[in-house]
Image (cartoon, rainbow, N blue to C red; front, side):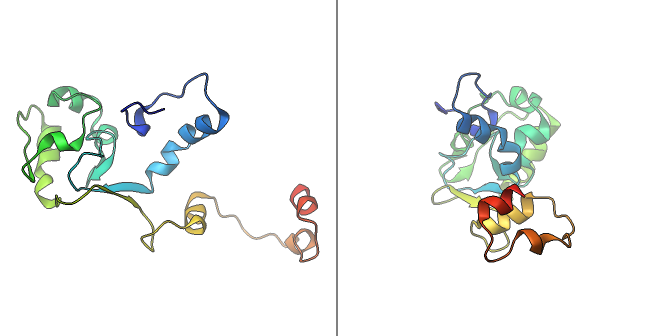
Length: 158
């Protein structure tokens, strides 16, 4: 489905499955939880993945920075890594200077590692749900609906 493109930039197709459409619609929610630890840069999209301290570069600086860089929109991070060091030529804008100024603080080496941002450092459905949902005050009548002998379907419908 991706065909070498970043998940974050795909348009939602008119003819696709319901589940694929829903996953694509939830990308903005997922962006707040996901980032990469840089390894060799072969699995990370330069503009569309969160690997830089500024976050998603395309979202932070806009599409103009892609044009100013001279790179394609789907370029991988490995294109600016040479012999295990950062190598970015042709600074054409202040945004690119800002991006490059933070590169020395990012370690390179090993394999690219996707990270799920959480308090524990690992994925947890419960923690993710708690961070995504709106917490409302507890209602006083909840025990009338949710009790140990209740039929779950009836409680849910109620």
